[in-house]
Image (cartoon, rainbow, N blue to C red; front, side, top):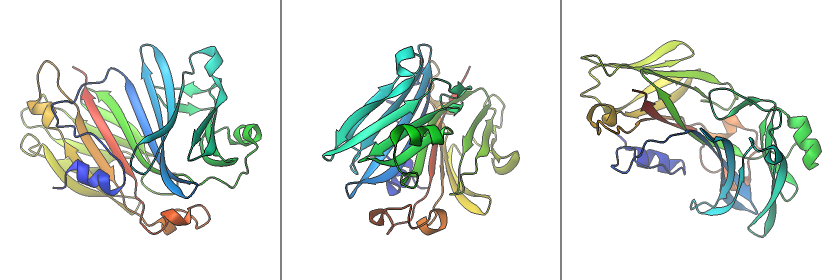
Length: 287
């Protein structure tokens, strides 16, 4: 079986080994979305991290170089009235990077990511390279950036989910922006636990004798897209009882750029290789 580090490295995304003894349970919901883009001819990663805890909600936008070194960072705390709408100017590679946001009317559900009525945009040298949210007209009007300049590619997502036997999230497995309901079901209290993966209400994978197959990999097909699934649930069965760690799941696709994006949307420096999408789920059990 491939290990998580090697698989994530192939897509340029770093992730901590969940089986490590340093794994610590988080007290907040967290979603990190990772986008690949090109700034001044250099490949960069933009990470947008949404968090939700007892203190409120926060979104952090950070730009990394190809070696995952942080170049610039801005933290937005929308529960503070003065931070719900605004902009921040940053600098990297000797160019101006402006982050714009409007979360004043944002609607939130159980996830730290907004459901709608918001925007977060990243503008580099007056070109909008990343735009999140459904208030696109308002974002382009505010930034005065051309509407055809978006170039960032969504390559990975890392999320912490909580539950007793069911862990659910939303996922995209292709370049058509279609969102799927992803559910992982596992009852570790029974004698012979089984791991089930469902997409849009259909069971696509079932792992029996899970106590003996606590690590493994398989392949499912979602809308004719092959998705490699890797799991590591060791901590659910053999972790420290007083502070069990999370199980981790990785869903990884691999598609050619030409099949998912037009040639005008992808910088030439990014086109020689194939792009896929990787979803990391850290599943914490609520006792």
